[in-house]
Image (cartoon, rainbow, N blue to C red; front, side, top):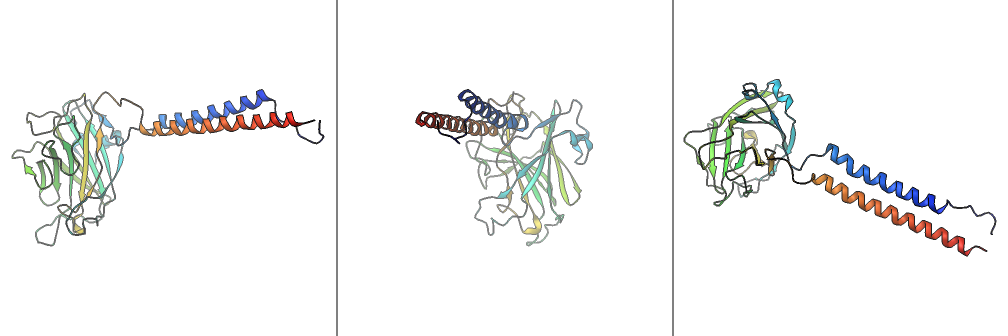
Length: 287
């Protein structure tokens, strides 16, 4: 045997170390997101067993029980001038319910409270929450379509709240008798709104929220001092309120991390096997 050559670890030890490494990598990749992950674009719902009187107040301490979700906003595709120049990059959303009513708390930063829209060049701050009328199918996010309309809970700082039905861009119709109540507050340079409505309604053109199905929801904000109005607005993607029995599979983060963990484990195993074979070959070549 040649002198001066360091002996490699025994074959069984090499295989054991490789297997242990693979297990550790896979476990860390899978378990971490399973503990901390949340299904994509989900807004958790706090259940209040009472009547929800405190939830109607935007600054009520009761809202601390509802987990906050930061919702990114971006300029809506539109043909209006400077449609891509919006100024609100994100909003904070919380949701709660009683056995009878849904409450959505919608908040965003805005240093100026624009309440005056009396002249042609002044615009009020505004916000909207959008739901599909038919909760079993997700409509186009830009105001729905003729086949799948949307309810829009709209509020402006100059005129208050409206409840709208839309079946595509430019097709909004206001309900004569609104079923949505909106309360507002200003807090630390932010608008804070609470939208409230009964879970179920008797109207076929209003979103009826059943407790056995998740409900899609989207958001929009207009900053009046930035000349935002009509199609010039900051909007979100579709999110969902988890009224249903729960996700039918793991969160997408878990799936991605699982795939990554498996890939790393395979690479570690292959590398370990290659090292083992190389050392076995070196030993076989020795005199």
